[in-house]
Amino acid sequence: MKGYKKLKIVMIGAGSCCFCPVTLQDILLSDLINSLPLEVCLMDIDAHALEVSHEFARKAVALSGRELILDATTDLDKALTGADFVITAIEVDRYHYWSMDFHIPRRYGFRQVYGENGGPGGMFHTLRNIGPTLHIARRMEVLCPDAWLINYTNPEAKLVEAVSKLTKIKAVGVCHGFDMGVEQIAEILERDPESLEITGYGLNHFGWMTGVKDKETGEDLYPLLREKEKECHWLAKWDEVGLSRMMLRTYGLYPYPGTNHIGEYIAWSDAFLASSKIQYFFDPVAEKPWETKKHPRFVYDFTSNPTGIPFSAVDPDKEEEYKNQFVIGEEGLTQSAEYGIPIIEAIAFDLNRYIPSLNRLNKGQIPGIMQDMCVEGPCMVDGEGIHPIRVDPLPPAITAMINQQGAIHQLVIEAYVEGSKNKLLQAMLLDPTISNYNNAVALIDEMVEREKEILPELHW
Image 1 (tube, one colour):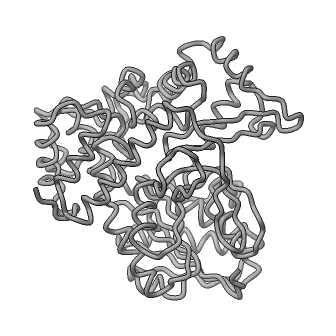
Image 2: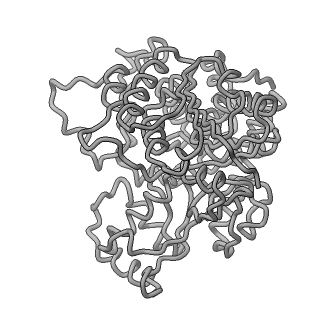
């Protein structure tokens, strides 16, 4: 166990509206972390995004009354020097490229849902983010080799697997998808989530709740969950959980986090996502989003009633998004439910803490799943590091679906390392959403050309 006499926490991708504000507030609200001499360094390649996050951080630090060193830099090496924990949430022109990930595979007739982690869109998302993520890890090998890399960037499992296999850096992937599933189950059961003891594991964005119990009595609540699910109104949050309910009926376990995510890994999910017809919708006659970089509006699903906006509405631009996200509410600093800072506390202060869902390489944690595939499951965290808890095997059909994705992980990482379109094609032809060889080849060629400024060089 390393005895920490000080802490330097680096946040790379500090312009992330999703993760920077909540992570910084979690740091400032932690009495443990602030009990040691503390340095927090914000790093982003976008100078303006960094300026916005730095200004927010200064206000948050002042409000907290904490004494710490706060720095901000666009220089990666400066940020990493002497770091103890490195938190990554990186993405370049997220919606610009993500809209391609969604639309172009569908144009070739493939059942691409969402396009973030699974399907052909998820493969190109991986290839865009794997280079920068590995660059960070390789600089860590030189500048802070003992530091932990805590990754929030998607595709979570593929990136953590790549770092863990191709570098010596200790990496863990963190995602709030498990908690989304807990909230859904609690709502169906009409119970407080805090009253439930839930276990889940599998693949990131394709996890399965294997145990649902009453925390106080230990009663198995899965029979009640199945009973109450059948009684629920069929249209209740249908776009988000209709597929989850069908998979519960089919496979006997409730999947998480929701249709957009789990649907990426199966061929028949598009019928259960009505909003897919308007996700990133644009008129190809009047609009050229990938040439103009005026990307279509992202729609998550219909549960938020995205078609109910008035005709006069105008979507917020990036500046408005910054103003809305990098803000401290009237209630002051607030604690999030994210796992990043609890992990740091547990390692730095040897707390022996249970975390219900983290992403690490499978070293026998889930029997039947490929060895060294990045899986998601419960872990204990202490001064020695992160220790996945061995769990029971998943049902054969679920195991088979996850192992298919494990082979895809391996092939996409090899495609990156070897610069091989052929390895990417092998991965694509394994994917359940792909149905035509010629179109898979054409899709690869078109995407590589469209995204050549950000993809690694790939050749046949």
